Length: 226
Ligand SMILES: [Cu+2]
Picture 1 (tube, rainbow, N blue to C red):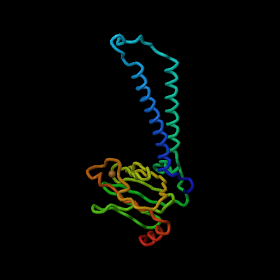
Picture 2 (picture 1 turned 180 degrees about the vertical axis):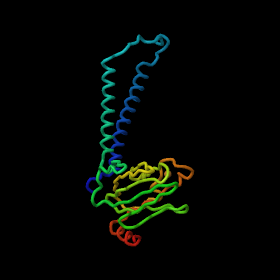
Picture 3 (picture 1 turned 135 degrees about the horizontal axis):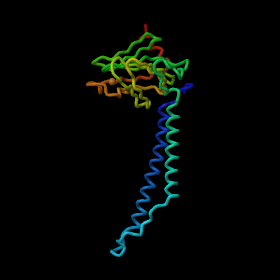
Picture 4 (picture 1 turned 30 degrees about the horizontal axis):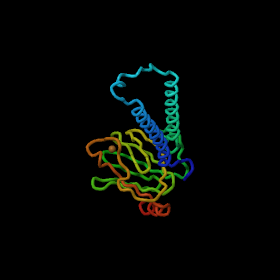
């Protein structure tokens, strides 16, 4: 993995695992308590059907319970925000380019417009534009940071790459910069989608993703470039 850019997919999967484990633990606790109370306090014939003398409350127990819940929430908030603070996942807008892209990052200008995507590779003079009949292909080098400079020509779109757990809105009149890494070679048909409803043909606003070895990527840029 290249310097400075985390593996977003792995980081968000790890984060999800924490949420999942806590959710399962709480579900099990409640399920066990329900069974215990059903068995222990079940009606045992008419004599016992009258309501048991109630207890009005147990303040220390309730405070302990609230404290545990607050701790869980605090941990989840902290974990979530520290995951999103990965340099590769940092949103930069309108020239506020904090989170400097790594020096070896490939640069791709992404432009969304109803209802297609355009990918420009300014260092290679390559433009890849979708048409009504064919979605474009985002071609990228393997295991190298790729800085996406994203904007829109009309309305708000969102670039969504489920395989990498990557999603970001793109806005007209504003550039958002993010750096991602695709660690494995492969081809994903419709691996990228628009995720912000943008009109009639929003659902068709897809693109394919092709990740090549560095050598194949160099060959591709030579062949396609000017
Ligand atoms: Cu769209």
